[in-house]
Amino acid sequence: MRKQSLRIILILILFILFYFKNIYNNNNEYNKTKNKYYQSSIEVENNNTEIVFLDKKVKIMVVSDLHYFPFEYTSETDEYKENVPNNRKLIKESEAINNEMKNRIIKSDVDLVFLTGDLTKDGERQSHLEFAKILNEIENSGKKVFVVPGNHDINGSNAVKFEGENQIDVDTVSAEEFKKIYKNFGYDEAISIDKNSISYMVEPVKGMKLIAIDSCIYGINDEGMFSETGGSVDEIKLKWIKEQIKNIDPNKELILSIMHHNLIEHFENQDKYFEGYVVEESESIKNKFADMGIRVVFTGHFHISDIAVNITNKGNSIYDVETGSIITYPCPYRIIEIDKNIMNISTERIDYVDFYGINYDFQKYSYEFLLDGLGVLIHKMFKEYIKDKKLDTEDVDYLMNINITKDYTAEKIFTEAMMENYCGDEKISENQKFVIDKLLNSDLKIYKLIGEITKSLFEDNLPEDNTIKIYLDKVNE
Image 1 (cartoon, rainbow, N blue to C red):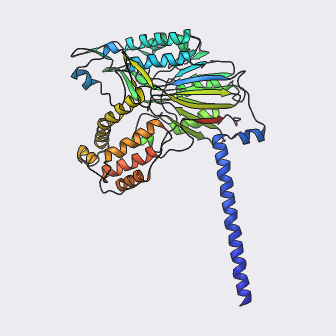
Image 2: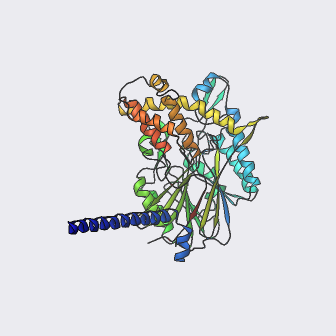
Image 3: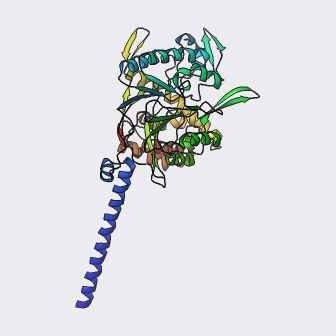
Protein backbone atom coordinates (compact mmCIF):
# COMPACT_ATOMS: atom_id res chain seq x y z
CA MET A 1 0.00 0.00 0.00
CA ARG A 2 2.83 2.32 0.97
CA LYS A 3 4.71 1.56 -2.30
CA GLN A 4 1.58 2.30 -4.29
CA SER A 5 1.17 5.67 -2.50
CA LEU A 6 4.81 6.57 -3.21
CA ARG A 7 4.33 5.63 -6.86
CA ILE A 8 1.28 7.90 -7.09
CA ILE A 9 3.16 10.77 -5.41
CA LEU A 10 6.09 10.32 -7.80
CA ILE A 11 3.79 10.37 -10.82
CA LEU A 12 2.12 13.56 -9.54
CA ILE A 13 5.51 15.24 -9.03
CA LEU A 14 6.61 14.30 -12.56
CA PHE A 15 3.32 15.58 -13.97
CA ILE A 16 3.67 18.91 -12.13
CA LEU A 17 7.26 19.33 -13.33
CA PHE A 18 6.24 18.54 -16.91
CA TYR A 19 3.28 20.95 -16.70
CA PHE A 20 5.32 23.88 -15.43
CA LYS A 21 8.10 23.19 -17.91
CA ASN A 22 5.54 23.49 -20.71
CA ILE A 23 4.22 26.74 -19.26
CA TYR A 24 7.76 28.11 -19.07
CA ASN A 25 8.54 27.01 -22.61
CA ASN A 26 5.28 28.48 -23.94
CA ASN A 27 5.88 31.78 -22.16
CA ASN A 28 9.45 31.82 -23.41
CA GLU A 29 8.28 31.24 -26.97
CA TYR A 30 5.64 33.98 -26.56
CA ASN A 31 8.29 36.42 -25.36
CA LYS A 32 10.59 35.48 -28.24
CA THR A 33 7.74 36.00 -30.70
CA LYS A 34 6.76 39.28 -29.06
CA ASN A 35 10.35 40.53 -29.20
CA LYS A 36 10.67 39.50 -32.83
CA TYR A 37 7.30 41.04 -33.62
CA TYR A 38 8.37 44.44 -32.41
CA GLN A 39 12.10 43.95 -33.03
CA SER A 40 12.57 44.84 -29.36
CA SER A 41 15.16 47.31 -28.15
CA ILE A 42 16.49 44.71 -25.68
CA GLU A 43 17.14 42.29 -28.54
CA VAL A 44 18.90 44.97 -30.61
CA GLU A 45 21.01 46.04 -27.63
CA ASN A 46 21.97 42.53 -26.57
CA ASN A 47 22.86 41.43 -30.10
CA ASN A 48 24.78 44.65 -30.70
CA THR A 49 23.13 44.89 -34.14
CA GLU A 50 22.15 48.55 -34.04
CA ILE A 51 22.24 50.00 -37.55
CA VAL A 52 22.73 53.67 -38.38
CA PHE A 53 21.07 54.29 -41.75
CA LEU A 54 20.97 58.08 -41.90
CA ASP A 55 23.41 60.87 -41.11
CA LYS A 56 20.76 62.72 -39.13
CA LYS A 57 17.19 62.37 -37.88
CA VAL A 58 14.56 62.52 -40.61
CA LYS A 59 10.92 63.45 -40.19
CA ILE A 60 8.25 62.39 -42.70
CA MET A 61 4.56 63.19 -43.06
CA VAL A 62 2.40 60.55 -44.73
CA VAL A 63 -0.95 61.64 -46.19
CA SER A 64 -3.35 59.43 -48.14
CA ASP A 65 -6.53 59.49 -50.20
CA LEU A 66 -6.77 63.26 -50.53
CA HIS A 67 -9.41 63.09 -53.31
CA TYR A 68 -9.01 66.73 -54.36
CA PHE A 69 -12.04 68.05 -56.26
CA PRO A 70 -12.45 71.75 -57.18
CA PHE A 71 -15.30 73.38 -55.27
CA GLU A 72 -16.44 75.00 -58.51
CA TYR A 73 -17.09 71.48 -59.89
CA THR A 74 -19.65 70.76 -57.15
CA SER A 75 -23.33 71.65 -57.02
CA GLU A 76 -26.30 71.75 -54.65
CA THR A 77 -28.61 70.04 -57.12
CA ASP A 78 -30.26 66.61 -56.82
CA GLU A 79 -28.22 65.51 -59.85
CA TYR A 80 -25.00 66.16 -57.94
CA LYS A 81 -26.23 64.44 -54.77
CA GLU A 82 -27.33 61.40 -56.77
CA ASN A 83 -24.11 61.04 -58.76
CA VAL A 84 -21.62 61.92 -56.03
CA PRO A 85 -22.68 59.57 -53.21
CA ASN A 86 -20.84 61.13 -50.27
CA ASN A 87 -21.24 58.11 -48.03
CA ARG A 88 -17.85 58.57 -46.42
CA LYS A 89 -15.94 61.15 -48.49
CA LEU A 90 -16.23 64.87 -47.83
CA ILE A 91 -15.98 65.66 -51.55
CA LYS A 92 -17.59 69.10 -51.44
CA GLU A 93 -15.19 70.12 -48.67
CA SER A 94 -12.12 68.43 -50.22
CA GLU A 95 -10.57 71.61 -51.66
CA ALA A 96 -10.76 73.33 -48.26
CA ILE A 97 -9.46 70.23 -46.44
CA ASN A 98 -6.50 69.93 -48.81
CA ASN A 99 -5.63 73.59 -48.33
CA GLU A 100 -5.69 73.09 -44.56
CA MET A 101 -3.42 70.05 -45.01
CA LYS A 102 -1.06 72.16 -47.13
CA ASN A 103 -0.87 74.82 -44.39
CA ARG A 104 -0.11 72.18 -41.75
CA ILE A 105 2.68 70.67 -43.82
CA ILE A 106 4.27 74.06 -44.55
CA LYS A 107 4.17 75.05 -40.85
CA SER A 108 5.52 71.66 -39.71
CA ASP A 109 9.15 70.64 -39.26
CA VAL A 110 8.93 67.58 -41.52
CA ASP A 111 11.60 67.02 -44.16
CA LEU A 112 9.68 64.72 -46.50
CA VAL A 113 6.04 64.22 -47.52
CA PHE A 114 4.79 60.87 -48.86
CA LEU A 115 1.40 60.83 -50.62
CA THR A 116 0.06 57.30 -51.08
CA GLY A 117 -2.42 57.77 -53.91
CA ASP A 118 -5.98 58.85 -54.74
CA LEU A 119 -4.84 62.44 -55.09
CA THR A 120 -8.07 63.36 -56.90
CA LYS A 121 -11.77 62.47 -56.83
CA ASP A 122 -11.81 60.58 -60.14
CA GLY A 123 -8.78 61.61 -62.16
CA GLU A 124 -10.12 64.93 -63.51
CA ARG A 125 -7.33 66.77 -65.33
CA GLN A 126 -8.28 70.05 -63.65
CA SER A 127 -8.18 68.39 -60.22
CA HIS A 128 -4.65 67.15 -60.93
CA LEU A 129 -3.46 70.54 -62.18
CA GLU A 130 -4.82 72.39 -59.15
CA PHE A 131 -3.50 69.77 -56.75
CA ALA A 132 -0.02 69.95 -58.33
CA LYS A 133 -0.04 73.71 -57.58
CA ILE A 134 -0.68 72.91 -53.91
CA LEU A 135 2.29 70.53 -53.95
CA ASN A 136 4.47 73.20 -55.57
CA GLU A 137 3.69 75.53 -52.67
CA ILE A 138 4.73 72.79 -50.24
CA GLU A 139 8.02 72.16 -52.06
CA ASN A 140 8.71 75.89 -52.22
CA SER A 141 8.58 75.89 -48.42
CA GLY A 142 11.55 73.49 -48.33
CA LYS A 143 9.82 70.10 -48.07
CA LYS A 144 10.35 67.27 -50.56
CA VAL A 145 7.14 65.64 -51.85
CA PHE A 146 6.82 62.16 -53.36
CA VAL A 147 3.63 60.75 -54.91
CA VAL A 148 2.17 57.53 -56.29
CA PRO A 149 -1.15 57.18 -58.14
CA GLY A 150 -4.26 55.57 -56.69
CA ASN A 151 -7.14 53.83 -58.44
CA HIS A 152 -8.98 57.18 -58.71
CA ASP A 153 -6.15 59.07 -60.43
CA ILE A 154 -5.62 57.64 -63.93
CA ASN A 155 -8.07 56.87 -66.78
CA GLY A 156 -10.99 58.16 -64.72
CA SER A 157 -14.21 56.96 -66.33
CA ASN A 158 -16.16 59.00 -63.75
CA ALA A 159 -14.31 62.25 -64.39
CA VAL A 160 -17.14 64.82 -64.39
CA LYS A 161 -18.10 68.26 -63.16
CA PHE A 162 -21.49 69.74 -62.31
CA GLU A 163 -23.02 72.95 -63.63
CA GLY A 164 -26.47 73.48 -62.19
CA GLU A 165 -28.55 70.43 -63.08
CA ASN A 166 -26.03 69.25 -65.66
CA GLN A 167 -23.38 66.59 -65.22
CA ILE A 168 -20.60 67.21 -67.75
CA ASP A 169 -17.80 64.83 -68.69
CA VAL A 170 -14.34 66.37 -68.29
CA ASP A 171 -10.86 65.34 -69.39
CA THR A 172 -9.03 62.74 -67.35
CA VAL A 173 -5.30 61.86 -67.50
CA SER A 174 -3.29 58.89 -68.75
CA ALA A 175 -0.38 57.38 -66.85
CA GLU A 176 2.11 59.38 -68.92
CA GLU A 177 0.20 62.61 -68.29
CA PHE A 178 0.15 61.84 -64.55
CA LYS A 179 3.93 61.47 -64.66
CA LYS A 180 4.31 64.84 -66.42
CA ILE A 181 1.97 66.72 -64.07
CA TYR A 182 3.80 65.35 -61.02
CA LYS A 183 7.31 65.43 -62.50
CA ASN A 184 8.55 67.62 -59.63
CA PHE A 185 7.35 65.16 -57.01
CA GLY A 186 9.50 62.10 -57.56
CA TYR A 187 9.83 61.49 -61.27
CA ASP A 188 12.40 64.13 -62.25
CA GLU A 189 14.76 63.11 -59.43
CA ALA A 190 14.20 59.37 -59.80
CA ILE A 191 17.22 57.07 -60.00
CA SER A 192 15.08 54.72 -62.07
CA ILE A 193 11.56 54.66 -63.57
CA ASP A 194 9.84 51.41 -64.53
CA LYS A 195 9.17 51.54 -68.27
CA ASN A 196 6.16 49.20 -67.87
CA SER A 197 4.42 51.30 -65.20
CA ILE A 198 5.02 54.65 -63.54
CA SER A 199 6.79 53.16 -60.52
CA TYR A 200 10.11 54.79 -59.63
CA MET A 201 12.97 54.68 -57.15
CA VAL A 202 14.44 57.76 -55.55
CA GLU A 203 16.90 58.68 -52.79
CA PRO A 204 15.01 61.28 -50.70
CA VAL A 205 17.96 61.65 -48.31
CA LYS A 206 21.37 60.02 -48.12
CA GLY A 207 21.05 56.49 -46.76
CA MET A 208 17.38 56.02 -47.72
CA LYS A 209 15.90 54.50 -50.85
CA LEU A 210 12.20 54.94 -51.59
CA ILE A 211 10.46 52.53 -53.97
CA ALA A 212 7.30 54.30 -55.20
CA ILE A 213 5.14 51.50 -56.61
CA ASP A 214 2.34 52.03 -59.09
CA SER A 215 0.07 49.22 -57.85
CA CYS A 216 -2.92 50.31 -59.96
CA ILE A 217 -4.60 48.37 -62.76
CA TYR A 218 -5.70 50.55 -65.68
CA GLY A 219 -5.78 50.54 -69.45
CA ILE A 220 -7.99 50.86 -72.52
CA ASN A 221 -10.65 48.39 -73.68
CA ASP A 222 -13.56 48.44 -76.17
CA GLU A 223 -15.48 50.80 -73.91
CA GLY A 224 -12.59 53.22 -73.55
CA MET A 225 -10.29 54.03 -70.63
CA PHE A 226 -10.73 52.06 -67.41
CA SER A 227 -9.24 51.84 -63.93
CA GLU A 228 -9.99 49.02 -61.51
CA THR A 229 -10.44 49.22 -57.74
CA GLY A 230 -8.03 46.35 -57.19
CA GLY A 231 -4.26 46.47 -57.33
CA SER A 232 -1.34 44.31 -58.38
CA VAL A 233 2.41 43.95 -58.16
CA ASP A 234 2.75 41.59 -61.11
CA GLU A 235 5.86 39.69 -62.19
CA ILE A 236 7.02 42.54 -64.45
CA LYS A 237 6.83 45.11 -61.64
CA LEU A 238 8.36 42.63 -59.20
CA LYS A 239 11.29 42.02 -61.55
CA TRP A 240 11.88 45.77 -61.83
CA ILE A 241 11.80 46.15 -58.01
CA LYS A 242 14.32 43.31 -57.61
CA GLU A 243 16.60 44.99 -60.13
CA GLN A 244 16.59 48.22 -58.13
CA ILE A 245 17.30 46.53 -54.82
CA LYS A 246 19.84 43.88 -55.83
CA ASN A 247 22.85 46.19 -55.38
CA ILE A 248 21.59 47.79 -52.17
CA ASP A 249 22.71 46.44 -48.79
CA PRO A 250 19.53 46.66 -46.65
CA ASN A 251 21.68 46.65 -43.51
CA LYS A 252 23.44 49.82 -44.63
CA GLU A 253 20.66 51.69 -46.45
CA LEU A 254 17.04 51.99 -45.35
CA ILE A 255 14.58 50.76 -48.01
CA LEU A 256 11.04 52.09 -47.71
CA SER A 257 8.11 51.92 -50.12
CA ILE A 258 4.89 53.75 -50.88
CA MET A 259 1.96 52.36 -52.82
CA HIS A 260 -1.79 52.81 -52.81
CA HIS A 261 -3.06 49.28 -52.21
CA ASN A 262 -2.49 47.31 -49.01
CA LEU A 263 0.34 44.78 -48.99
CA ILE A 264 -0.92 42.90 -45.91
CA GLU A 265 -4.47 42.20 -44.72
CA HIS A 266 -5.33 44.58 -41.88
CA PHE A 267 -8.00 42.34 -40.38
CA GLU A 268 -8.97 38.72 -40.84
CA ASN A 269 -10.56 37.98 -44.21
CA GLN A 270 -10.22 41.58 -45.41
CA ASP A 271 -9.65 40.44 -48.98
CA LYS A 272 -12.59 38.01 -48.81
CA TYR A 273 -15.17 40.57 -47.68
CA PHE A 274 -13.68 43.74 -49.20
CA GLU A 275 -12.19 42.68 -52.52
CA GLY A 276 -9.77 44.99 -54.30
CA TYR A 277 -8.08 46.61 -51.31
CA VAL A 278 -5.15 44.21 -50.85
CA VAL A 279 -2.80 43.58 -53.79
CA GLU A 280 -3.26 40.35 -55.71
CA GLU A 281 -1.04 37.47 -54.53
CA SER A 282 -0.29 39.39 -51.35
CA GLU A 283 0.76 36.25 -49.43
CA SER A 284 3.68 35.78 -51.80
CA ILE A 285 4.49 39.45 -52.46
CA LYS A 286 4.77 40.47 -48.78
CA ASN A 287 7.34 37.73 -48.11
CA LYS A 288 9.37 38.64 -51.18
CA PHE A 289 9.38 42.32 -50.22
CA ALA A 290 10.53 41.57 -46.66
CA ASP A 291 13.32 39.23 -47.74
CA MET A 292 14.50 41.81 -50.32
CA GLY A 293 15.02 44.21 -47.43
CA ILE A 294 12.00 46.52 -47.72
CA ARG A 295 11.27 47.47 -44.10
CA VAL A 296 8.05 49.47 -44.25
CA VAL A 297 5.40 50.02 -46.93
CA PHE A 298 3.15 53.07 -46.52
CA THR A 299 -0.30 52.45 -48.05
CA GLY A 300 -3.86 53.84 -48.13
CA HIS A 301 -6.97 52.94 -50.18
CA PHE A 302 -9.30 51.52 -47.49
CA HIS A 303 -9.50 54.84 -45.56
CA ILE A 304 -8.56 53.22 -42.22
CA SER A 305 -5.62 53.82 -39.90
CA ASP A 306 -4.03 50.46 -39.22
CA ILE A 307 -0.60 48.89 -38.98
CA ALA A 308 0.02 45.24 -39.88
CA VAL A 309 3.21 43.21 -39.81
CA ASN A 310 4.45 40.09 -41.59
CA ILE A 311 7.44 37.97 -40.58
CA THR A 312 9.00 35.64 -43.13
CA ASN A 313 10.51 32.18 -42.56
CA LYS A 314 13.91 33.87 -42.60
CA GLY A 315 12.80 36.06 -39.71
CA ASN A 316 12.54 39.31 -41.69
CA SER A 317 9.78 41.75 -40.78
CA ILE A 318 7.83 44.08 -43.04
CA TYR A 319 5.25 46.59 -41.80
CA ASP A 320 2.26 47.84 -43.79
CA VAL A 321 1.44 51.26 -42.35
CA GLU A 322 -1.95 52.18 -43.77
CA THR A 323 -3.07 55.79 -43.38
CA GLY A 324 -6.73 56.82 -43.46
CA SER A 325 -8.13 59.48 -45.79
CA ILE A 326 -8.00 63.15 -44.87
CA ILE A 327 -11.54 63.52 -46.28
CA THR A 328 -13.02 60.69 -44.20
CA TYR A 329 -13.40 60.80 -40.40
CA PRO A 330 -11.17 60.92 -38.38
CA CYS A 331 -9.20 62.67 -41.18
CA PRO A 332 -5.77 61.40 -40.05
CA TYR A 333 -2.21 61.77 -41.23
CA ARG A 334 1.02 60.20 -39.98
CA ILE A 335 4.22 61.65 -38.56
CA ILE A 336 7.24 59.37 -38.97
CA GLU A 337 10.53 60.08 -37.18
CA ILE A 338 13.59 58.00 -38.06
CA ASP A 339 16.69 58.07 -35.87
CA LYS A 340 19.43 55.46 -36.35
CA ASN A 341 17.51 52.15 -36.51
CA ILE A 342 14.35 53.38 -34.74
CA MET A 343 11.17 54.50 -36.48
CA ASN A 344 8.61 56.33 -34.34
CA ILE A 345 5.12 56.57 -35.83
CA SER A 346 2.40 58.85 -34.47
CA THR A 347 -0.98 59.86 -35.85
CA GLU A 348 -2.58 63.29 -35.93
CA ARG A 349 -6.00 64.47 -37.11
CA ILE A 350 -7.29 67.52 -38.92
CA ASP A 351 -9.45 69.21 -36.30
CA TYR A 352 -10.10 72.52 -38.03
CA VAL A 353 -11.08 73.55 -41.56
CA ASP A 354 -12.11 76.98 -42.79
CA PHE A 355 -14.76 75.96 -45.30
CA TYR A 356 -15.52 79.13 -47.24
CA GLY A 357 -15.72 81.34 -44.18
CA ILE A 358 -17.55 78.83 -41.97
CA ASN A 359 -15.49 77.78 -38.94
CA TYR A 360 -16.63 74.69 -37.05
CA ASP A 361 -15.57 71.70 -34.98
CA PHE A 362 -14.31 69.70 -37.91
CA GLN A 363 -13.88 66.42 -36.03
CA LYS A 364 -17.51 66.52 -34.90
CA TYR A 365 -18.69 67.53 -38.37
CA SER A 366 -16.75 64.74 -40.14
CA TYR A 367 -17.84 62.18 -37.51
CA GLU A 368 -21.53 62.97 -37.99
CA PHE A 369 -21.10 63.02 -41.78
CA LEU A 370 -19.57 59.53 -41.77
CA LEU A 371 -22.13 58.20 -39.29
CA ASP A 372 -24.99 59.38 -41.51
CA GLY A 373 -23.39 58.12 -44.71
CA LEU A 374 -22.43 54.65 -43.49
CA GLY A 375 -26.08 53.56 -43.25
CA VAL A 376 -26.57 53.95 -47.01
CA LEU A 377 -23.15 52.47 -47.77
CA ILE A 378 -23.73 49.40 -45.57
CA HIS A 379 -27.12 48.57 -47.10
CA LYS A 380 -25.67 48.89 -50.60
CA MET A 381 -22.65 46.78 -49.72
CA PHE A 382 -24.67 43.84 -48.38
CA LYS A 383 -27.14 43.92 -51.25
CA GLU A 384 -24.27 43.70 -53.74
CA TYR A 385 -22.53 40.98 -51.74
CA ILE A 386 -25.68 38.85 -51.52
CA LYS A 387 -26.30 39.24 -55.24
CA ASP A 388 -22.69 38.45 -56.13
CA LYS A 389 -22.46 35.38 -53.86
CA LYS A 390 -26.00 34.21 -54.69
CA LEU A 391 -27.06 34.06 -51.05
CA ASP A 392 -30.72 34.12 -49.92
CA THR A 393 -32.76 36.99 -51.24
CA GLU A 394 -33.81 38.25 -47.82
CA ASP A 395 -35.00 41.85 -47.43
CA VAL A 396 -31.71 43.46 -46.46
CA ASP A 397 -33.19 46.88 -45.65
CA TYR A 398 -35.75 45.33 -43.29
CA LEU A 399 -33.33 42.94 -41.56
CA MET A 400 -30.66 45.59 -41.08
CA ASN A 401 -33.10 47.85 -39.23
CA ILE A 402 -34.96 45.50 -36.86
CA ASN A 403 -33.64 45.09 -33.33
CA ILE A 404 -31.29 42.22 -32.55
CA THR A 405 -31.29 43.28 -28.89
CA LYS A 406 -32.99 46.13 -27.10
CA ASP A 407 -30.24 48.58 -28.05
CA TYR A 408 -28.88 47.17 -31.29
CA THR A 409 -29.85 46.64 -34.92
CA ALA A 410 -27.51 44.89 -37.38
CA GLU A 411 -26.86 48.25 -39.03
CA LYS A 412 -25.87 49.86 -35.73
CA ILE A 413 -23.37 47.18 -34.66
CA PHE A 414 -21.79 47.10 -38.13
CA THR A 415 -21.58 50.91 -38.21
CA GLU A 416 -19.84 50.95 -34.81
CA ALA A 417 -17.35 48.34 -36.04
CA MET A 418 -16.60 50.41 -39.15
CA MET A 419 -16.15 53.59 -37.09
CA GLU A 420 -13.67 51.80 -34.80
CA ASN A 421 -11.85 50.46 -37.86
CA TYR A 422 -11.48 53.93 -39.37
CA CYS A 423 -9.90 55.20 -36.13
CA GLY A 424 -7.59 52.24 -35.44
CA ASP A 425 -6.73 50.59 -32.11
CA GLU A 426 -10.22 49.09 -32.08
CA LYS A 427 -11.97 48.40 -28.78
CA ILE A 428 -15.04 46.24 -28.23
CA SER A 429 -17.46 46.20 -25.29
CA GLU A 430 -19.12 43.15 -23.70
CA ASN A 431 -22.44 44.40 -25.02
CA GLN A 432 -21.07 44.54 -28.56
CA LYS A 433 -19.63 41.01 -28.20
CA PHE A 434 -23.06 39.78 -27.10
CA VAL A 435 -24.73 41.28 -30.18
CA ILE A 436 -22.12 39.76 -32.50
CA ASP A 437 -22.65 36.32 -30.91
CA LYS A 438 -26.39 36.68 -31.52
CA LEU A 439 -25.72 37.40 -35.19
CA LEU A 440 -23.25 34.53 -35.55
CA ASN A 441 -25.75 32.07 -34.04
CA SER A 442 -28.66 33.27 -36.19
CA ASP A 443 -30.34 30.96 -38.71
CA LEU A 444 -30.30 33.76 -41.29
CA LYS A 445 -27.29 33.77 -43.62
CA ILE A 446 -27.28 37.57 -43.86
CA TYR A 447 -27.00 37.87 -40.06
CA LYS A 448 -24.21 35.29 -39.92
CA LEU A 449 -22.37 37.24 -42.62
CA ILE A 450 -22.78 40.53 -40.76
CA GLY A 451 -21.60 38.84 -37.57
CA GLU A 452 -18.49 37.40 -39.26
CA ILE A 453 -17.43 40.70 -40.84
CA THR A 454 -18.23 42.75 -37.73
CA LYS A 455 -16.15 40.39 -35.57
CA SER A 456 -13.22 40.74 -37.99
CA LEU A 457 -13.44 44.54 -38.00
CA PHE A 458 -13.39 44.72 -34.20
CA GLU A 459 -10.50 42.29 -33.73
CA ASP A 460 -7.40 44.45 -33.92
CA ASN A 461 -4.24 42.37 -34.22
CA LEU A 462 -0.92 43.63 -32.93
CA PRO A 463 0.88 45.94 -33.34
CA GLU A 464 -0.83 49.15 -32.27
CA ASP A 465 -2.23 51.32 -35.05
CA ASN A 466 -1.70 54.97 -34.13
CA THR A 467 1.46 55.20 -32.04
CA ILE A 468 4.30 52.71 -32.29
CA LYS A 469 8.06 52.43 -32.10
CA ILE A 470 9.56 50.07 -34.68
CA TYR A 471 13.12 48.78 -34.29
CA LEU A 472 14.66 48.11 -37.68
CA ASP A 473 16.88 45.09 -37.04
CA LYS A 474 19.29 43.30 -39.33
CA VAL A 475 17.86 41.73 -42.51
CA ASN A 476 18.66 38.02 -42.74
CA GLU A 477 19.77 36.65 -46.11
